[in-house]
Image 1 (cartoon, rainbow, N blue to C red):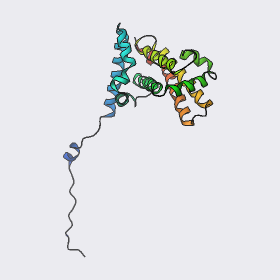
Image 2 (image 1 turned 90 degrees about the vertical axis):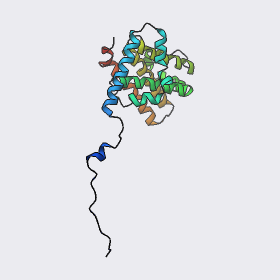
Image 3 (image 1 turned 180 degrees about the vertical axis):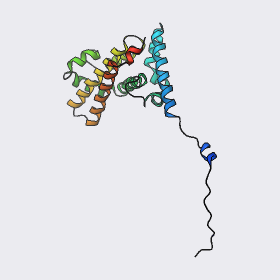
Image 4 (image 1 turned 135 degrees about the horizontal axis):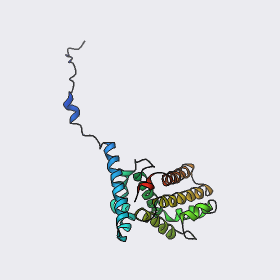
Length: 197
């Protein structure tokens, strides 16, 4: 046997947990994200300044996609914040790999002809044309019908998913792009667009 004396462990008490610094409250982050999305869209729509629409288009570049992700990526797809996150993510993806996107779009447009018309991409759909289209879609946040903005983005994502399928893309990539398309389209049919001025 050991000569060591065993003591009963100390309990930390209530003050111990008060000193632990935790992350941001998810409910407050979501509330702040929803408020920021509403202010962004309403402010841009009420302004007559065309430069403001351009600032909205380039928001992910100026503020950083990571910043937008912190505030909006956890928002449900049927909220304004969730829609904005998906739109900015789509634009960032097009700009990150425009040649691949152009190849997928070209392969998919033959399979989803109606969506091609809704997306509104110039023919032939090269990298520059896709960048112009996605920027024009984002300008719809500040002007135009928000539902149309969502429908155009949804149609674009559907065409790219069809193109990925015809080019033997990975099942996960195709599924993610189809899910994005369905989320944007459902949001366009939902109440979000009706609440905007």
